[in-house]
Amino acid sequence: MVVASKNHVNQVVSVAAQRDDARVTFTDVGIFSGPIGTPLMEYVKVAFPPDHPEQPVIAALVDSDLRELTFPIERDVTVRPVNLLSSDGHRIYRRSLVFLMTTAAAEVLPGVKIEVMHSLTSGGFYCEALKRPNFSEDELALIRTRMREIVAEDAPIVRKHMPLEEARAMFKARGDDDKVRLLEFREKEYLTVYSLRDNLDYFFGYMAASTGVLRLFDLFTTGQGFILQYPRPEAPSSLSPYKESKQLESIFLQTEKWLDVMGIEDVGQLNEAIKGGRIREEILVAEALQTRHLSEIAAAIAERHAQGTRLVLIAGPSSAGKTTFSKRLAVQLMAYGIQPYALGMDNYFVDREFTPRDSNGEYDFEALEALDLKRLNRDLLNLMQRQPVQLPCFDFRLGKSLPGDVITLTDDHIIIAEGIHGMNPDLIKEVPHERAFRVYVSALTALNIDRHNRIPTTDVRLIRRIVRDARHRGYNATDTLDRWESVRRGEKRNIFPYQEHADIMFNSSLIYELAVLRPLVEPLLLQVDRTSPRYVEVKRLLAFLGWVRPASMDYVPGDSLLREFIGQSVLEDYVPGLRQNGIKPLHSQSS
Image 1: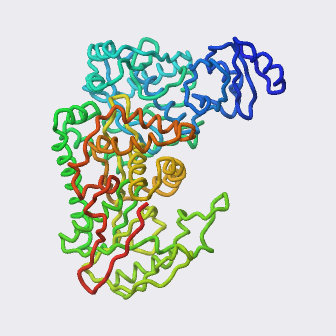
Image 2: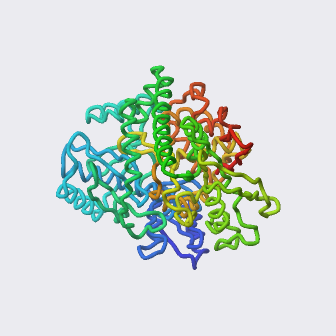
Image 3: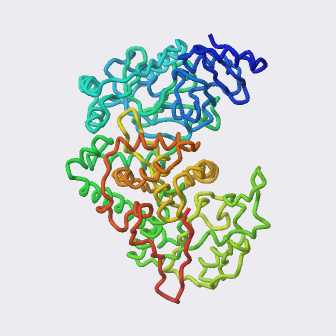
């Protein structure tokens, strides 16, 4: 029995002093005690009743270590609840929901196999049934109903260690070749698996203690597959309306075709390529596929240029490789006889005194209004009309806009502008729509650990950024992790809502990159202090990377987008040049 009362602390301390009791302190809630070995969930039930604003609690930080609610409390600890508002809680919810779905599907449609393909910005996973037609509405209704029955049952999700050879035999007997490949390179002698009713499976990362917390979800068909919908972290008590993302779906479909061409669909197959000495060839093919798409984008821009387009806007989230993409695109355009001019968007900041402030009273440099939109639009129109323009040059030390170069462009030129607001239609409201071409760049990872465990795009971008920040900016991993939450908030506000406004999307993800990034990022992550609040994230990233065999960076081409992060890029000091009138393009600051 758990004893709890924040109004009778002395009584609790007295009880906890007994050798068979342990104290659990929930900050701002109270102190609770119970027999040693009591699962954390029993404390949570007392401290956070169903109507508590923290609910649903799905995990907890126990003395700063992330733990499942089944974790037994053996000593006095301080605990902070984890719910769907946090990234850890959201990951656990989504992961557990996939287990619920696959379990329900196996019960109502025996023998069916499901692959989780990729995530959606509106909150959901795109999934497909394997080796059979897409689920019908009636079949999805059966799965949905069974899922809700299991949720109402509050069935336990049980964690256990299984000997590695036993796990391999089980997955081989079930025909789960993706997991068999994955376990071929497992170094530990056991595998942590989870059971739900009669279903046993491997999932990377922690799970909910039981199905009762998985109340919010939906299933519906789309295209060749279906959507498993879940609540977004910013709105954990409801499901957001589904928004079709044709551009995003198109780029994922393209990437899946690339995976088929390369014969690599999961981490196990990537590991086999590395072990078999084929990684050099896989790198060359991956780079060739990406170069072909970049060439196709340049061809589309060249066609539009002939019709009067004079501006290319490039936007995307942090660590997408926008800088290298811009430079490679410029080279491709020059092959068409088009002269690129790199316009520095950072030079269009308003004077510091006019910079908007956020809710905390701090300068909000990411707000659209932090740019001098009137001058930007005027300069763009004049440049397109071959008029001389004196560009601004922003002095970040003074916080002032100063006079810059005077330039004049010709009909052979095209302006390339990279910035976080590039897809926002309010950026260039005065420029006719047909005169601009918009490219959205992101690292949209399609390679998964296995069919039920996907690799989040966000994780790949974070790993890229940790490596780049250490190599080029002198930041350690803790510095980067400290900034990451703020970076993500800015992306959700300024970038993701406008991605569908792009004329075309470019996927900068490379199928082999985690193998190359692993030996570079692991030493940086291992330097993070174990007492740091960021160490939970470090442990998760290290465990995830442990599934990927390392590969040398020596075979990565000098103009690869990956070189922007790992170094030694042949494009590092290259700025798109203009070969007439002595015009010198401006550098743009990498985001």
